[in-house]
Length: 449
Ligand code: GUN
Ligand code: FE
Image (cartoon, rainbow, N blue to C red; front, top):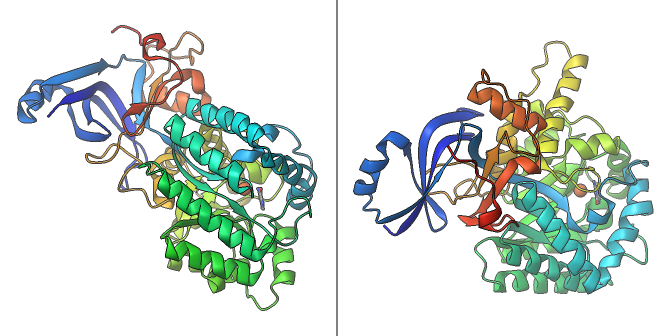
């Protein structure tokens, strides 16, 4: 075995059995992009012999540091990045018309796209998002630039050119159904031709109101033809639900519209699902569709309270999304906190309701997200054989000491980070074994042990 990077110290990750498993005094071996062993550090000398390791680069974590899986954002709009943290005054449909579509229309300009997408991907990596499921804009060239940007920065991503030809402003819609399909296929082939192990195309009908039935059917066929993921929005607000019922009077529900046209597959990610009826939850479950839970957006746009416990109990795959700029924060740590608070809010109104724990939200942010995008065999936790997408976290950096006291347990330090930490506590961000953090290696402050 060649040059193995070995991290020794505390690791924390989620498994199917435990939402948050903490393992101390461990050695995690990484060769190229993959995890080759996870064993007690006391075994390191034996491991070196066992695996015939010649060279190692050892990274010894301190008592204030730990390794956790990279965060997965299952729903974010890259061209809404300029609006992060502004314009959260109107409900969904009015917000789209007044603020979102005008901003996305600017991505007809390639230079603007290049600038914004560079800044957006850098910010997300800095926040620890090693994998992102992106909505681009409807522009072919601009969304190619988004693909190029994530590819160059080394982030893992699904990237989608948005499709919308109906019920949207004349200045921001695709020219025709045929144009939409042709450009989408060109986009899929462009991303596939990057020959990246990390970046994949995703078919992205914006939402049922913006895509007539035939449009959605043919996009579903295109996804099937190229074995692509699919993403869209579902049951986000009550007004949107009512509108879908008006536009598709033959349907029994919003999910029925997507199911009928073939958009519900085991590679489909549907954002929100706040107002899903029981039969729709069953339909998503049956088809293998995953849900991107976006609590910040649901609260900011006053869309509603999404009952994640209900979705999890029904056996759905659930991950977290920031839904920037419906959500005001690009950080999945923020989504994680708001997922807990949204669930606790529901528990204040419902007798006997079991809200999700911080630990469960941690699982949604990592392994849950990986499952939603069908990548749990590659990422999501530190199982041997998976790719090494990881964050090196320090709870006691100079910038943000997180009120750590000597008597704090390891679990308490991790909880303090999850509730109060930020990008200053994230020292390194690895995607497939590669450090993508913007700081050069020598500038990274790793305290001596
Ligand atoms: N529904 C259709 N488009 C959008 C969007 O850009 N953001 C959100 N949150 N919901 C949508
Ligand atoms: Fe969205």
